[in-house]
Image (cartoon, rainbow, N blue to C red):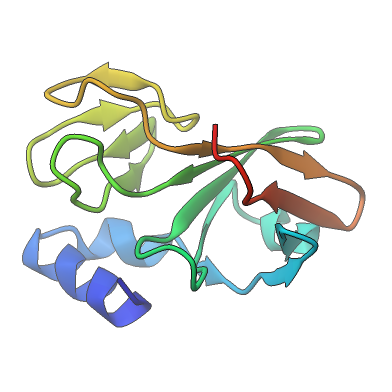
Length: 133
């Protein structure tokens, strides 16, 4: 799903405001990792990142210090795109709710979102694409 399809899906689901307020940022592929400038988190706690290897964007969230989480925004229940909200990620199709780290808070989903290992330094955030958690 590309950015236009994602925003269109948000509009159909009545979630345009929630979808648009989470910006898309550009990452670069480097040694099997998706790298994002840490400056992207200067004024926000979370961003969406598209990668050609995935049909859904990744949601990357700054937790604190050098701690970040990254999850695939594909709901494990029926494959809809989950949406970031104030206290987690929610599936507009059937109501499954997840923590920002991908753990199930409310069903019908029974499995967590696909998670990725994330490391960070002073300048960049690096998401390991090999072997999703």
